[in-house]
Image (cartoon, rainbow, N blue to C red):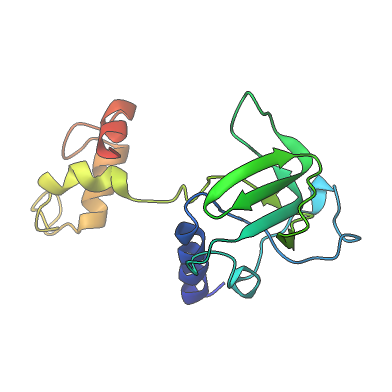
Length: 171
């Protein structure tokens, strides 16, 4: 996947806030239905126009593997998700919504509310350690990346970060 395609796909997911259709695409129901071993990711073209256009609309994500991340609801090997505007209205094994745009999610994983797990916010605490991105150390010159990696992995430049520090940097 090209970097531009990745950025466009990520932006589409972020625009929906409550909707992240990670891997949600348009595939015939006969393909991949309920088979966990054949999961796939959507292409950027499949995600175009699903979120972020400002219209209030109802979207029914049908037949995906749903990971709710909610112990009260549980996870579903195959379920539907109804989105009303920017709100997840319902999650159930089968939902009827004749007025909703239907997106076939068979063979994909759908995580409601999931936006992204990849970020670099944990590095914000390091900005005070390396404000200019270059330090004199054991080598003649160190880059921002080498300094950050030495902090995270070895604690060579400053004390290694612990889970509490990283949690605080994400606030």
